[in-house]
Image: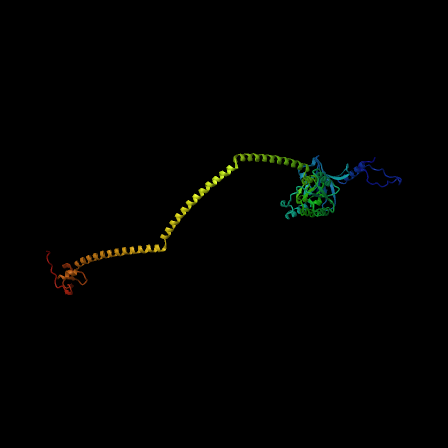
Length: 468
């Protein structure tokens, strides 16, 4: 057996052998080992590979499996980071759509004959073009309000026909039919669609449009099984998202598994983790509803019986309190008669009070009549005028008497009376009266006032007289 590490991949006839002799066939294991040796020998050491992460699958063993995709060319390679090299940072970086750099050695995994890159270190290299495109489209559609919570419509409680958009050969339609029929049966209308690959988005849009033209369809399920990011790409297409958002009936998204999230999930009215869960959300459980109806009927019967019992007891108590209806009517008639009499008495008393009030008002009105008021005012004016005249006459007489008495006293004290008796008054030139010898000197001019004339004189001499 030739050395496995130097096994040549040239399968042409060797020199020195007959031309018709075929080379010894290789086993699959030999071929895998030869290819593995050639791949690993083509690189002297570890290499750095940069690409976009797709179909990332953490395994229960702790290993991390994913695919590195070239963003410029149609090329990809499987990659694995074994548990001994997996760190929390590595798990954070290796997500679908992320752009990373992986250091590792390319090799061939013999059990599957699959070329893969065994990495031991992962570094961030930015976001992948696919993820960036999805995020941009998500932001655009969100700004238009296609993902707004207020646009979400409630699912019908008992749909007559359920439309399904999925592959006719996949497990989705079988899971939905199985669950729907188990829960009580529902009419399932399938619109076959291509759910991955080229033309999948157009096929899904056509299927949704076909179901909308069927008037009996109450709700539509758009779904497929799990897969890689490339497999789910059609459900991130803008046309598909707009078709779901603009559907005339509620739409349930059942794309992939619980960890798979697409833009259709945001535009749909409800999201189911699996197609089976979508069927459970839409189709009510007939047995559960029958049991609910049975329990509700029992509760209703018990409530009705209890209500009838309470009403019957209340009726009996009321009948006991009521007694003979004729006596009750007679009693009420007596009460009515008494109240009628009281009403009549009250009415008569009220009329009497009102008549008395009316009489008082009439008397007051007559007293306040303008002619009566004017007559009273005229009489009062006449009385006041007489009083004013009497007071004025009395005051005039009193003032006249006082004036006469004062005139008599004034006349008695008048200097003219003294002059009439032969006396005279001498005044100097300045008008001052001469009262003593010192008031004049010889040669001064004097004016002498007598009873009926004034005499001008000149002082020739001043002679002092002794005091009496």
